[in-house]
Image 1 (cartoon, rainbow, N blue to C red):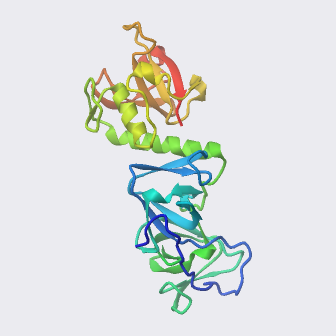
Image 2: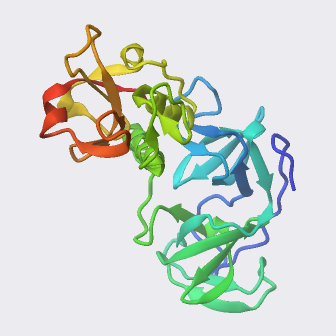
Image 3: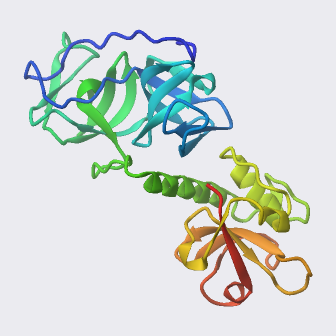
Length: 303
């Protein structure tokens, strides 16, 4: 195991292509990193002041592309390239771990899949340019992959990670990256569906409305104020038609003199998730019609 924050010198063992050189090959991967913090932010550059592209929860893995110096690594997380602090990454040059999908990027040539991590091993398959495979491990710059029931190794020099079996990437604009983080927040929030509503509840088995939003956002490294009214000071205001997944949505049922009486998290398609004071549990409700559409008052964009 290679300690995080130290320079990695990993030899990439030769080209695995049938051709000697291939134009436009991507950079080799150094290893795989496992997040050790509760949440670790992926940033646009190697600085805590740079834009947040995504947030990886504890236990998630990233492909380590290079040591960026000063305790930072350049990484690929869910097909988005950025930088993470090495202080919170457990980095290994060799590991059996499901990374996701990879697509052959061989400049129009074919790529040899071998029985081991090097060109001296037997060829077990030949992959056409653009072929998508499952990446299930890494070994000193070689990806361990499965394709059509066969497991073998390919040089990471000639692979790019992709989001799905269709080969789509996730490294678009910062807006797309922010949207991705919002979806991560929504997905995490839905893990608590059915948990009890308890006034003053802070999780993880029971919540009140603002305790729920605060708990979910804390998982991604964001600190929200404790009450629904005070959470109005977090983030920036958005109109109802500007709501994105992960935004806070606020309501006022009219029984209080405060500006809001309830808060939840918008999940998209006119729906939101919240610790409901009506059903006394975490559930999904409709924002576009019915009761909550009538008492909706504000939206706030946090990420």
